[in-house]
Length: 223
Image 1 (cartoon, rainbow, N blue to C red):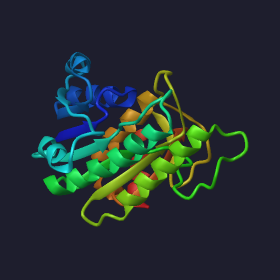
Image 2: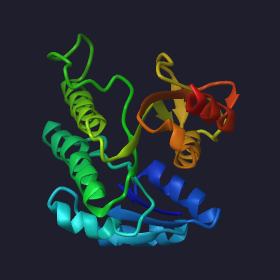
Image 3: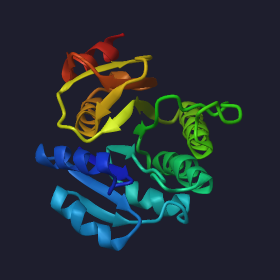
Image 4: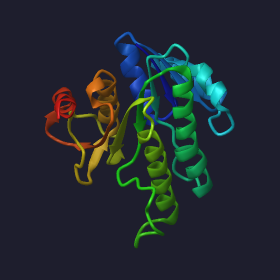
């Protein structure tokens, strides 16, 4: 399998690249800055320099040609303002989906966020306004992807991300309730979802739990 990952230098993406390369898959990661290439090479991935905030659909589609699957794991990241939540978390996700369709790559995984909601009104009490904009941007991107009949999409919405060692045990379902999940386990679940076409058309929440990842993915594939 060849998989192309948008946001290839992100913490989840680097873990995913190592897992895919480790099992013998071809993997490429789209990065914005050339100096990030060495980290991808160390993870076993082919670095592809392309700025998703300035590229057009045709350019991104060229990078996706010949891929079996695509993963959107890009994000503006902490410290970025509302404007980049729009241009990265929403617009770049839509661009990547457009490019996947143009390149004929049907399988698309999107790393979203729990509570993502395009219809979120204002700023809920106690929430940072930029975070509210982030949830709206992620929700709008999810809405766009879900409307595409030309893609076999799965949207994954992890809970609060941590850097602890993965446990290999999770709770994965349509609605889990809020909780934490290690980045290690998110990456492992993404590998499993790539191998589970029965999860296409699903929006799944993910937190730490008691079920081994292969069993959790089989359960949502069969439901």
